[in-house]
Length: 356
Image 1 (cartoon, rainbow, N blue to C red):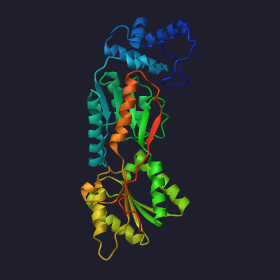
Image 2 (cartoon, one colour):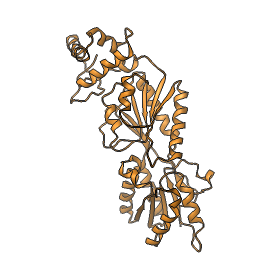
Image 3 (cartoon, one colour):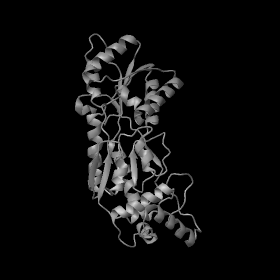
Image 4 (cartoon, rainbow, N blue to C red):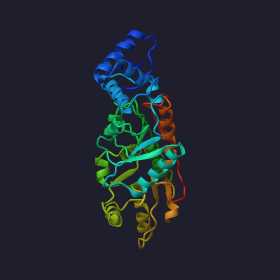
């Protein structure tokens, strides 16, 4: 059974009690006419009582979505399984190799542990429609999510289960489950630690400028809330972008510390590979005491890179675990997590470096 939703977009709705059989037949007739198939084909596409060609089934689901009807849980539950989960992981000019590999391999491990294979897509253009149209996968996981991510908009019109690691904050998602490190809370923890340690003038080394212009969701959230909490505690925050060439980090830091000589701490919210270079530079400045340092959004393994500094890590396995749970439940017909988001509480790894 399919139900009509408010608005023009298709979305998953709870079943409405009391829908008559006549209403259901009328709905199926409209979808059948739009898709150019028989009413019985529409019925089989949703009920799974008879096997139909994957392309025909997708044609029916697409027609329902375009007409603004929601999909019953059986639309997920009864679809022929391919045991493939697609991962949409766009590669940008500012993409971090460490970050990309950390999330990719953790996601691969999660998918393989579920008994499925991974199908990787590395661009954003129309790939979700192509996956659904050609019945290439049982579901999709989105990585490297933007604030206004077009993939999240597209997912609202598809019958395919979609989950997002990263929160598309400017998209009204009623189908997509999203999870991420709570960067608002990470910003609050950062300022609280700074205040407790008497640090009053913080330099933040962010990621490349283009990442912010593109609307990278976690970078935006951390920067926004760090500034907000800093005002509450009377802490001054200056912000600098990472350079395009990673070996120019020292030059950027030198310029910023010269401009703001009162700086008494450095917070890094950038690619993980930036941290060792910044750490080595600050550790070897002649005649200068080591600057208190904290890395936010790296991966918890900085000591392995020779950087024994405080850290609020983004642990990929925690996010991937939540994403896999959500997509598995959706593929089995449970739509209770659709449209919800679950923030991961940050952990503070105290190595004694973010204090005077």
